[in-house]
Length: 335
Image 1 (cartoon, rainbow, N blue to C red):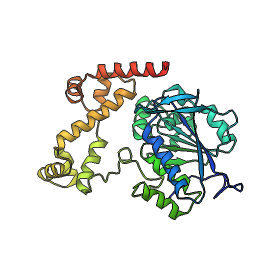
Image 2: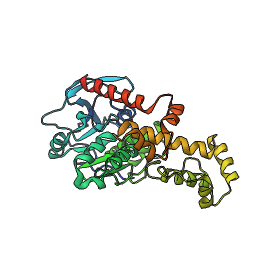
Image 3: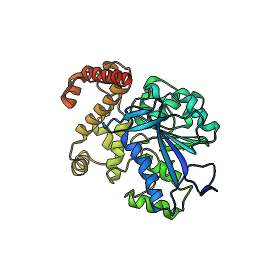
Image 4: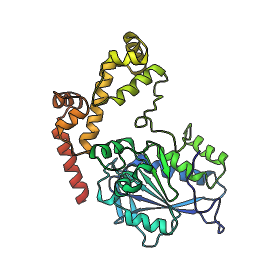
């Protein structure tokens, strides 16, 4: 497993725990915070002495609320941080001002701390550092936003995580567990890491180079080779959807066989799955880009009737959901 290269290995000479700063922005993603903290907690639980000590921080300090509504008290960012590692947790909006942390990142790396940026925090770093943007990763949804905006980094890697020696960018979400297990692996035995993963019921620790399931186009969702191949073809042709007859010809099975496989594994039909896949993609673009509704419809293979189809599926018009997103965004920035 590819891990996070630390400043030193094993325990400190002083026996003190390794210091970790966890930086959150308003609206942070709770599953990512949990993926980091629970692994650190588990490592402490199974070690003879605590390996890690962490502090929650934010740009302004005080109480910070997650997207799920739960929150916590934080300390302000230190002017002279003494942390060995710093995690920055994303908040579903890479344009959020609290994620513009160029100066903060430099302060940590100057003091030889390892910086680990998750999802939107990674996306913001990629946007603000175009010179090495293709070498870093972010969640596939954020990558799609970069592509639609024509920003550098739109065609970068879809790996779960990338470590350039100073900074680690990560796709976030559940891969936060794999990322943190990689860090823990630098300070405890492989058996200890596996024990932590077992307690968390994390069946397989994924290597940093593992591709993201959707964005990396490496699907093993159903365990049916031909069905997975068909889904991959659908994902590769969102803007110009291909007839099901073309897909089955390329996969090498009959239309009837494909229908049976979709019904058995996914309880749906190929056409319904393909349409819903594109509608969900459209929803991502609607919430995370400034493309017009018509442009989004075209980008997802709906040249006509997109708004009506969207409303029938999501129960609200594209214009209404975008307006709600803008209103919520303004409120969170004013809070």
